[in-house]
Figure 1: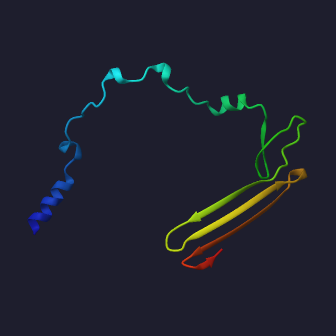
Figure 2: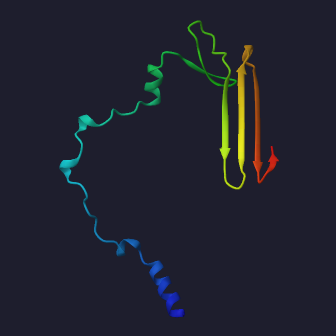
Figure 3: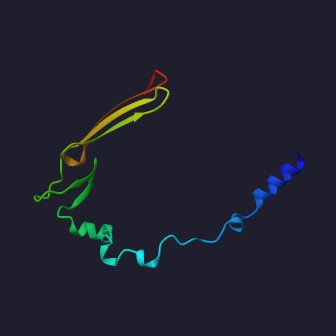
Length: 121
């Protein structure tokens, strides 16, 4: 029994690279796609902001676009969540935030969760 344990311990401590074989090439260099067929590079945040026609500011409910007349967007913004699981787990939630004048906001959210048939909030 001691021999088996010591052999397993010795195998566990061996470096993995020593047991691995050499690297095998699976594609030849002629199979690489030409540079022209690659997708264009992603824009940086500064480049995307320069291309954005509407300026954005942070308001009480998150980012708000600024209209042509200089007033921020006052539309309500919201979210919906759903969760499903095994053994009776369920979850649902929703919320909405409406910006008001002078930097204020009204926010309402509701949620309900169940675990094993018992309700939890």
